[in-house]
Image (cartoon, rainbow, N blue to C red; front, side, top):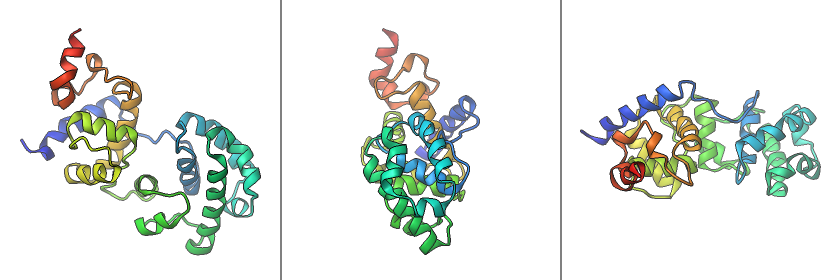
Length: 219
């Protein structure tokens, strides 16, 4: 069985466990998701979701963000960490969205990567969740860790290589939601601290379980 075929049972198992596959960041407008993802760098989604309601209420439009004082923005996002750089990026990003993209979040990868503070992970998430582009892979820490443990990648920690390897085997129509489900699965079962193989529904297809995990689960 090829790697392309072997990924389907994993997709189905994750679908059964997490049927909704929703992004955990809360937002109403497209640019709000873009900004929330920027805030989530080196920060938890839970913390970002506590911060953004007040932030978006104070700056309810893209124009108000573009005219904002970064220091005031920083007061609202202080608890997210690295708030000075993040606040500057939000203001500059709002300005660029208005000046270069007519106030719309662009769809193309090259355009997204031009925006302040936007890397491939953010760009892929925006392409998938906002523009519904098939085939995107959001190679965050959960995706990198779990895809390596499962054997879907060669174990590399390089996000760009993980993205490339998963694009080769994931059905394009499934890839974005697959990555959302890996985040949920990584928080609940296959955590960074420990792979909980004893309660994992993916052990039949997992490289980690077939090596170290099986012995661990039997202890």
